Image (cartoon, rainbow, N blue to C red; front, side):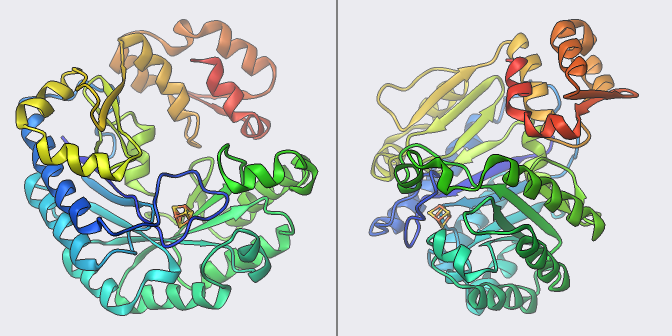
Length: 400
Ligand code: SF4
């Protein structure tokens, strides 16, 4: 069975005003955090020894994946990152053809770090570029400018990374479709194989929410944002990128296997404060609290962790069970996850796993969304139409 492991580095040099991912800017306890993460790696591995995955669509891709996300994983000393990766690789006996990704911020990568990442086994890097327009980067409060972003791409490529991904944010006030297309052209010419395009959203609790919530008209009008979304997808396709998911596009052979594991309902283990995982029937999380994480991981025993992955809550602990999924829940999750992908819901796969036809279980919902022109059936798949992409969340929520 393929293993999928997510490691959350909860440290950033500065908080971007639109971001609601868990991260802190005080990294005084970073060494202790990584020690705790190594301990958690050992705990998970010991807890799952006897456990067989009961998730329905596991192993569609069949390859192991490891993903260091954040926060800013390129911020800490590379020694901390590579020591943890070494532990994950050996403890989980990860296959040599695994996809191993690290997220990096253009403002915190350098030649030495990149060389050490490659030597340790990372073979994919995801750069948080967000834009190559200095005005847009200023609006987003990023630490780098376009020159810094281009230097980072070239550094990553010279260091020897072949599988490079870059993030773009669309729908930023002042951004234009022409500008986004120029950024994509530059990525394409610079050897970027995978592009994630995220629409800017207002998340409660962020400075952007305070700034724009009452004057929503200062943001990009929804129609213009949608035009930008579709225009961006079409442009990516014209260059040969396959738009394989709502926000992700890749040249052939460069899809993110790790992200695909989420959409395939695969089991994945999470390490680090602020991260989420899925073991057996349990969706679980770690509280957004680095200090509590360090304290709790220092005292947790193998038995505690074993009980936890069986669904037992540990009182006032960083680890918490978010949901124990029934067979019904798992069926409902399939459209929620798979409709994000361009392939959509694979009806034969669903039947193979659950022994019932998807269109029998969800007959009314499927019918009404097809009638509204938001879903379409193509042979043995069911997927969002072009207009369905604009109402993706509403369609997916219909199934929950
Ligand atoms: S660097 Fe990334 S994770 Fe950190 S605050 Fe900015 S957007 Fe969020």
